Every structure is written in C-alpha cells, then in structure tokens.
Image (cartoon, rainbow over all chains, first blue to last red; front, side):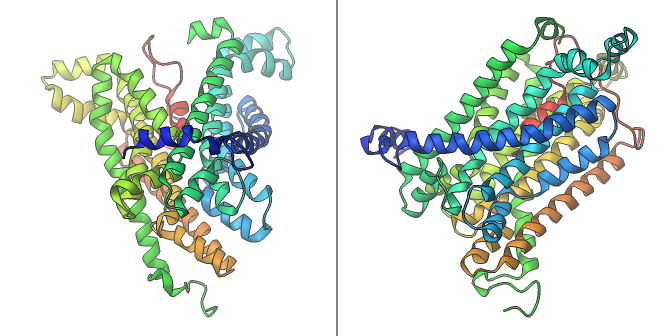
Length: 222
Length: 240
C-alpha cells in the first residue's frame, strides 16, 4: 500500500466528484478562503510596503510586524478566534491574513528599498512627483520581487487554509481532517494531493503573471 | 481548575513548563537536523551549478505540501510519535536553509577565495575558515526564519495524537470551553518564537564581530549570472 495507490483510489472513486463533499465544492470553498485572505493581506501589505519602502522610513516597524506575524502560530490563532468568535469565516480569515501579511510586507518594502537609486534621482531631477516616481519608476523595477512575495504568501495561504476544516468549515482540509478521524488514508492522501496541486497551480499562475507584467528591460537586467 | 493561570488539565499528563520543554524539543531538533543536512546539499549546489535549479524545484514542491497532510501521511510509516512531527519540520527547514546557505556561500568574493588558496588553505579549511564565517549572516537569517516557523508549526502536531507541545492545550481549551488554555498556548508559542529569534540575533552579533553594528549590511556584489532574487526573497519564500 503506497501513497500512489491511495491517490489513484481517491481520484477514481466517482463518489468523490459529486455533492456537497465533492471535489468541485471543496475546491471552490478552498479557493474562496484563500483568495479572500490573499486579497485582504495584499490590501494591507502592498500599500504599507510601498509607502515605507519609498520613504525609507519605518523599516524597524516593518521588521517588527513581520516577526510578530510569523511568531503567532496560525493553528493556535485559528482555535483562539474560533473560541472567541464562534463559527464563521472571520476566525479563519484572521490567521490566514496574519500569516500572509509578513511575506508581502517585507518583500515589498525590501523590493522598493533595493531599487537602484540613480534612476529614482533622475526621475526626481526631471520633476516627477513622488507618486509618479513610486508607480512609474520604482514599482516596475521592484515588481519581480513584489510578485515573489505575493507568490509565497499565496502558497502559504493555500496550504494553511486546510486547518479551516478543524473548526468545522469546508475547504480541501475537510478530506484531511475527516480522513484522519475516520482512519481513511485514501481521503487524507487525496486531500493532501489536491492542496499540493493547488499550491503548484498558484506557483505557475504567479510565474505567468511575472512573465507578462515584468518589463523586458527589467527582466534582462536582473 | 481555575486556581492558577498555568494550571492545565491532567489528561495532558504534563505541567505547563513540561509542555514548553516538549514544544522546544519538537521544534528545535528538526531545525538543527535540517541545518546539518542542508550544509552538504548547499555545498554540492555551489560546486555543481546545474544541480541548484532542480534542488530548488524539489524543495519548493515539498514546501507546497500542507503540514497537516504531511503529518497524517507519515503516521502510516512512523506511527503517532514525535518523529512524525519532526520529519516534516525538518523538511520545511531544508527549504529555508538550502537557498540561504547557497546565496551566502556564493556571495563570498572570488578574490577572497583566491587569497585563501594563495595562503595555502586546502578546500576543507577554506570552506570552514573562510566561506562559512563569511556566509554566517545569511545562514543565521535562514536559521531565524526556520526556527520561528518551526516553533509555530509544532502546534499542528496536536491533531495526530497530542504530539504538538503547547498545541496540545488547544484541543483541551476547545473541548472544556476554557479560552484561558487557548490563550496560554498561543501566547506561549509566540513568546517562545520571539525569544528564539532574539537569541539568534544575539548569536549573529557574537559570531560576526566584524560587521557594522546597528546598520544594514551592504548588499553582496553578485556575479552576473546570480539568481535575480536576493537572499531576502528566497528566505521569505520558505516561511509558512
């Protein structure tokens, strides 16, 4: 009995493809949790990172927030929020956002900070306003790194969203948690495979985004 | 039951400080093992350039496997033991260490290596006395990320038969409706992680006395074919 055997058995079972516990439903739930959390985390991390990176101020606070965010255990935070807030989507969103903000924030800050200062000075000398410098000079150069931050946040969210199942929510973690309690390894392995594949799809998605959005000049220079 | 803040239910068969010790053991042994395994792998990647991209791919894929699934799948092979928790944590720390060490060792300038060779250092002494010390800040940066994420991940081990150190309090907190236990677990884990992080910063200051204090380290001058992402990005990649 090896892992491949379980994977094959899980995916060839027709019952796993239909109904509220079917793969399409669970996949949609998982994507819903992950994308919502990623959007919230990006909504916090990107503006703050761009601003602190552009002004060069607040680096210590960024590092502090990142360490604090990393130190908080996602799983513990989930259970804590569940105990305090009860069943719902908020207790799941909080740990996922806390998990994803540090990588986005730190890489965005570092990316903008590490932009070569001479083009920035040139832009300023040409009379560009600060917001235009940020969005038209610094952002295009910093984009590959910023995307790598978003990518690692996305992968972490996708693989951590499995723990939502522990507090009675759906998502692909359902298969893992249910399989664990039912001693059904086929289910566990199947769920794990789905999550890993989803994470790899995210990896491919960000690779494609980087391919299309990063300016060829920046790509060649790096 | 509510007599003391640190009182915990007897079904865990441990005191709070016992759980703290258990948690540290479960989190730190894999990190140390991961570092010891990553050093030779990274050295091979530095020596044989073609090896690095495939190794990065393998570690990235392993890193995409959720910890919970990793634990549960391993039960089939190693049972509900500490080893089942430690193996995934060790693997995740590898994902942090390999790029950190490779970037660190590669950032040693060629002139420095040539100078060491000219002074008569063999490859082994050159590695231990020149390359590793210069790469130390990058390695310790990796060590910090690996340690902090390992400490916070141990809690998930609770799901596989109370192998989660402080995480074991989470389930009891839920089934006995005692938020206090959950707070104890979350705050305890966070404090352990921050203390470990601070300790490693101190270690870095001690082992790299030549570096300027309190200022950012100058970026290493990468050789032209170096990877586009600086070490910071590679490290971020591995936090989970």
